[in-house]
Image (cartoon, rainbow, N blue to C red; front, side):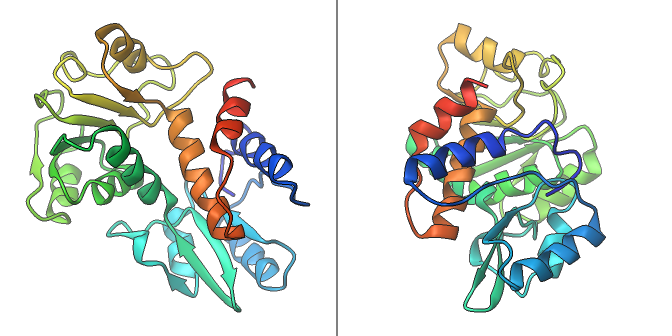
Amino acid sequence: MGDPVAHSLSPVIHNAAFEEMGLDADYGAIRADTIVLGETLFRLRSGEFSGLNITMPLKSEAARLVDVLADDVGSGRSVNTIALEAGVIRGYSTDISALRALLEGRWPDVDSVYVLGSGGAAWAAADAASDRVLYVGARDPARAETLAQGHPDASVVPWGVPVAGAVVVNATPIGMSGESLPDGIVDAAAGLVDLPYGPRGTPAITLATHLGLPFVDGIEFLVAQAGDAIRIWTGVEAPIPVMLSAARNV
């Protein structure tokens, strides 16, 4: 649920998982505003839906409307997954849980993360990296400062300035339309998590590949957070390789 949703790969990813798991379930995209979100939560409570995913611009509103926030929602109070549990509508952030797992799995020995951006995705990234040295850079210095103040020991870096040896998490839209990150950002990094995704990849991922840097692209991240959502809804681990294959072969 969100606006826009027509471009979303989530239906392809989730329905491939449900088929592989043998579940009688169907996942669809709903273009929604705040009013539609509120109505759909009533439909969830009545049993018409088994779960919801929320995307922009409704994540903050979803956090306000659910009955209970899970512990993993973090300081950004942004919800992207909703489940009905024993009559209680609970909001989760699989953005945080998925990114934390990817960082731990891919870069267990890198102690610093450089988050680019200051919106909801950047807050989730900062929460996911809360156990590491955190750097924040955004085109709006005031918003970067606000994000850093919400995370102990985080430091603000002027926009476009590289941080040597950190894992860069691009939590901006830069790359979705073929734009490049500022010069030197990727070159100085220990790795890259690039949240934007498109049919041909992003310039940042192309550069990381050329440099031989380990990376997670936006599709792998999308599949990881979808897998966490499926586990929340069903209690069963999701078939990640099947989901990743479906997303990459659209």
